[in-house]
Image 1 (tube, one colour):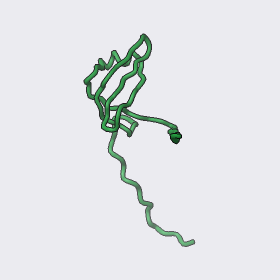
Image 2 (cartoon, helix red, strand yellow):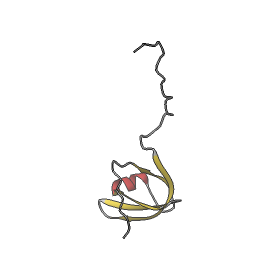
Image 3 (tube, one colour):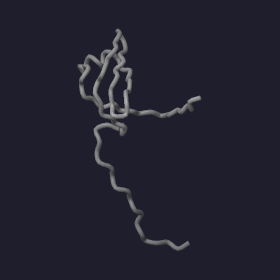
Image 4 (cartoon, one colour):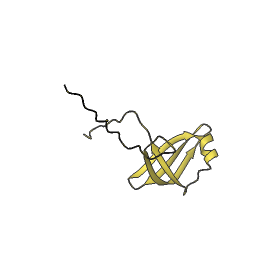
Amino acid sequence: MAQTNKKPRRAKAAPRREESIRNRIPGVVRSILSDKVVSEVVVETKSGEIASIITTRSLQEMKLQPGDKVFVMVKATHAFLQKKA
């Protein structure tokens, strides 16, 4: 095989990001259900409601309340599907 002096093409670098999660869905907090350790935060998005379970401490530190604008950031190593019967 003949060798060439061509340099390999490099992909352009992606814009710098503040976080590694790329699936950011904007929404509004609709409801919060808390106990001592964990809280369920329901967020209304254009695609429908998404529930997130976070620590109650995180909820308090973020000072989340219904009506707050947030981003739901989804990071998953698996996605499962089930066909309806």
